[in-house]
Length: 146
Image (cartoon, rainbow, N blue to C red; front, side, top):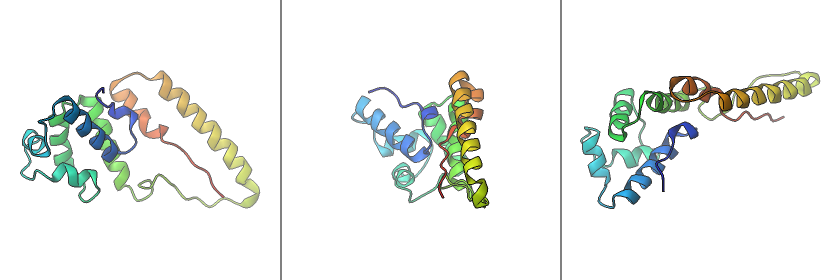
């Protein structure tokens, strides 16, 4: 089992869960208590509470988690972006609602598909670090429904 790549995730909770499972597989003695100690946190259940959606990460706690997980600058930026994306009222559920006249719906679908194809192309051509982070948010799946 290899270390999960945060840049492949669109949900920080899924990443944290996978990262902890990876760390536990690599070192069976690794625990939530040990992670809390590495992150400078008092609560040994904080990571599990975040993973389960019972608690949210503040920027300070996210920075502490990043240090404990030894994320580089680009990976940490992606973690922050995922956290802030979840907090966004317009994008938190991955959906943006817009009103489109019925006679223009087909045009919107074509434009959105072309836009998504362009973003996929960009994501495939950008390599590493902060540049990849800047594009990664725009590469989240776009859905169109009527």
